[in-house]
Image (cartoon, rainbow, N blue to C red; front, side):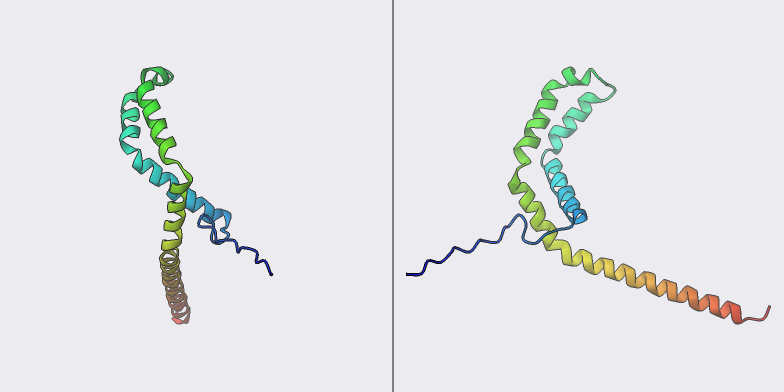
Length: 124
């Protein structure tokens, strides 16, 4: 009787290794999503803290605790997974846009070179 070793399922959190810059982009999406979910709490704390420095810590305590509780409630691995999925879903589109921008830059560079050569050929 042969025993099979169960194959490891692909990790949804990291389907392929990302560079440090790509991981940074995923983290930015993640934090943006969490801040978006907690926008009312963040706004309430910010409004309370206006024109306060050290005193904001205890005067705005309820708003600060509400904001922190919201952030902790939403800053979960599941939310990071969603941000990672969003990053992978939009990766090809971002790559295409970047290639189009590089093509436009190359076209402008070729045009500038052509104009410079025409200018050099003109008699002075």
